[in-house]
Image (cartoon, rainbow, N blue to C red; front, side, top):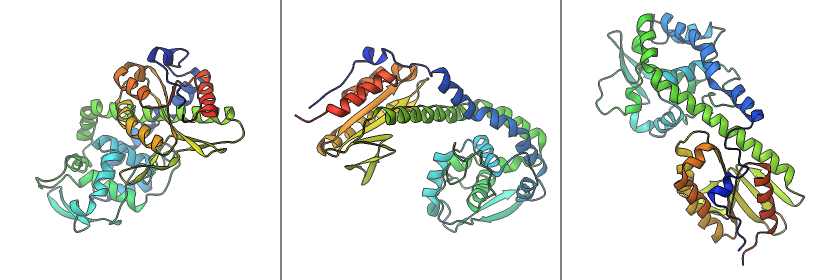
Length: 340
């Protein structure tokens, strides 16, 4: 079987390591930091004004032109330290957490009950219109967005000792109308908030690099080869679901598939570790079906995780960096790879 595996030193040769200037400018233009900074005062003003009732924030938000519902939800998620993944888990366990489709809370000494508008939610950054591709397109407050705002503001304001940690954080509503307390809360949460926003920027970097790799591969591949974004390979499954690859190349002459995982990290984080842990299973499953596994790896953060990187090299048929030379090597492999 054809192999095109490189050592770590060979991968570093002509690797990007850091973003090329052109892509760095694209990432900077997508950064969440300036956008959050530009809307922070409007967000805090709503919290400081909306104190006449638990739902007063809704009417104040509707009259505020300087912040969209998208950014209001995003600010709350960041301030509560409850992002897309925790919200997704809360939605997945909705019937257990909220068996009556509602929750009780105490605000300003009075007991209230909030009934959810959607009793079968599937919350995610995308469904809440705060994902990277949606947050800058203002939308009206949806039922799901309103439900999540009420959760983030009030779901932790009760005495239930069995409340999950993610819901225990949801107590921002206690500060409504108290400007000094809100300002102090923001200062206290700053250390927690910064990593969350950095994580969003790291995701943007990954998306920009994936797009660059995809577009260049599309131009390099000759006729007879299909390139699929976020594709699957027939028969390659995990936990009873089709495994999704960042990209899939299909050699149409014999229908051989090449599942590509793409990763670029400037700083070390868990992405390369997660993908390294998944690599062996993906590699073996591809081989069982007569297909190939490919890893496209670059960035200083990836090269610092040598143990994970060695695992990625070991459990794939072709491992290249993101340089043009690296992708040309991949295209050469795709054209010639056959099983012995």
